[in-house]
Image 1 (cartoon, rainbow, N blue to C red):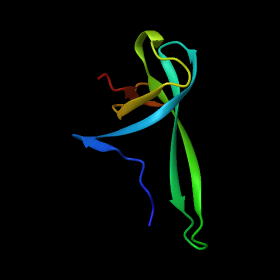
Image 2 (image 1 turned 120 degrees about the vertical axis):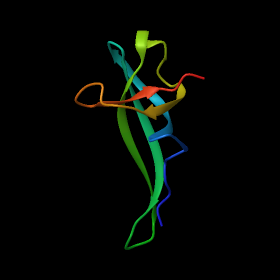
Image 3 (image 1 turned 180 degrees about the horizontal axis):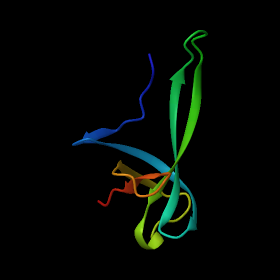
Image 4 (image 1 turned 60 degrees about the vertical axis):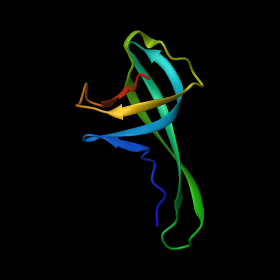
Length: 86
């Protein structure tokens, strides 16, 4: 049994919650998503982190801020999420 990192679905896109870890690119931020997963053989729970490149117009978010991101069409080669505005 695996603990999922999906918060909820909007249409076809997933909504995830994560922490901003870098804002060094133009209109792009790096968001780290943490989850706990159970090892399939040994049963130990492990913390897993995954980083996503997220489209953020004007880079209004700062490092350490917790934000929601939503899956969208591919914006570039590695960027397929955007910031969910509240």
